[in-house]
Image (cartoon, rainbow, N blue to C red; front, side, top):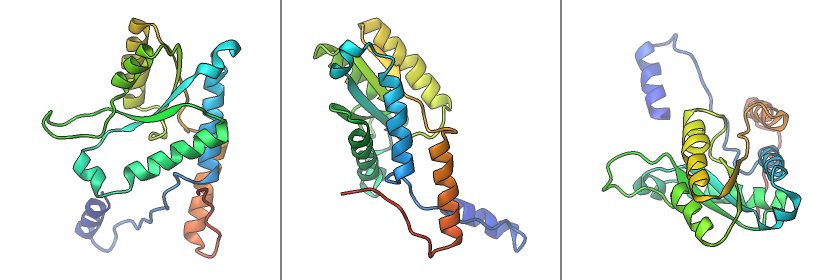
Length: 196
């Protein structure tokens, strides 16, 4: 997408707007704080006596396997999940994918969230928190794929699903974005990140 933006800028000429990208934030402490708090809020919707058995599905947008092989997409998502699980005390989690599109013969990242939900039900799980870690707002793919399709599937198979919030306007997430902008404007500022 950066190449496309640059091509359009060149077509517009010298008056084209300037832009600068901020760095990735999958392991920024304020992003992890946001996701951990949203998981905890979702978990509180499950009766206290059942919370020890909660399973967590972190979701992200599926992409073609070939595209994934040429990027850090899965590595960064997995690390964001691990850090969130560590911060929130999540015992049982897995990263799954949603919103697959494209031709059926083209391999895309899996496991699909629907398959994962069915498998949890077959294992005797009663409660699942779904946290869309690969999305920053409640746009249509979150609302339709999770709040409609996944929720309907859970109703059908008898699995209690609570969907955690996306970062949206969470104060820690907004503060992180401001920090990343300041960091981009002043390269001497420290670049905070969590990790092993």
